[in-house]
Image (cartoon, rainbow, N blue to C red; front, top):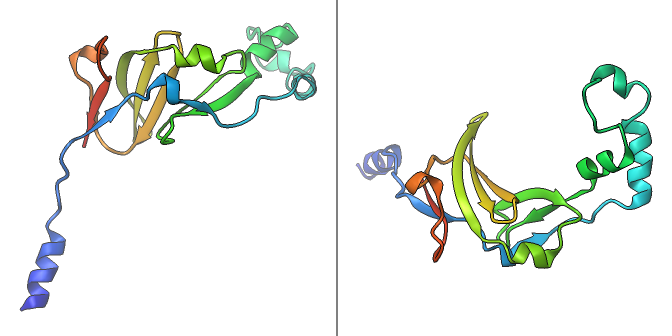
Amino acid sequence: MRLLFAALALAVPLTAAAAPVACPDAATVKQVNACPSMEELKYTFDGYCGDNARLYNPTDTTCETFENYRKLKDIALWESADGEFANYLSCDMAATEMAKARPVKISVSQKKGLTLLRCEYSNGTYFVHRTRASCTVPDAGTCPADGPCVAQCD
């Protein structure tokens, strides 16, 4: 009899309450890997932008100049303090500049079975949280000026 109750208890799905997920404070995000050196960029420019690259996509301007290529490839991974939000940002982004940014918008999208929660900041950067949970954002995604920018995820 006890086994029957235990089996029934395990068979009943547990419903979790919606949990708040807040955009990270820009002052706490950190660069977690190193930027490529100029030597690495020059080396990969030669490989990526070889003569055949122009044949595959003649409208792409990435390989027109080294500076165009550097803007695309001179990036490093940044993460929130808890590691939940991440994005690749330009190596030209100073940590002090990032720390001054504030969240201005939060949005939700779906991609290949994942929910992408995107927090956009006043300096034009954004961080993304990937989850299998379903998330909703309040007030058309605009963030309050005096508080955290929060979504609800189930």
